Length: 148
Image 1 (cartoon, helix red, strand yellow):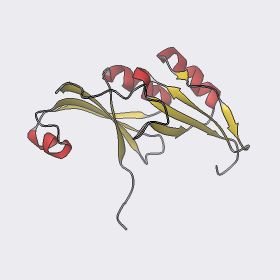
Image 2 (cartoon, rainbow, N blue to C red):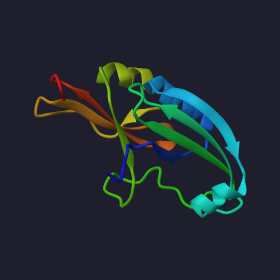
Image 3 (cartoon, rainbow, N blue to C red):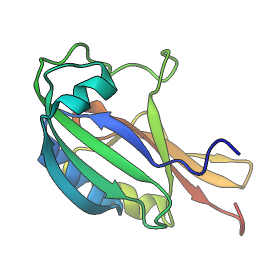
């Protein structure tokens, strides 16, 4: 076996506090927050002389994490926050939720908006894409059947 498990997905943000609030409201748990400005980090990422603050958040099932990063240096290279879903590269994370409507209601005061509409897929899922803080694309899926 070459992969043990997925550890985390990284998302770069401009406002770390707002992103933490959004993801904890969604149901993730903040594990920790720290500044990283040591040379080893730039050797891993290829972004030398980086100064970044990160926050690690764990999913409720404990199986995955999101790493939020805010770069103090160097300047942000590009911005993909409002890219449409058919753009090349990573674009979204999807979460299974117990109650899609309640989740949307909780996130709306934080600026979350449904990309188009909530749909039902073959009686298995109710789902939608939302734009969260800074336009981050998030998928939400409510299982409608046991085991989905």
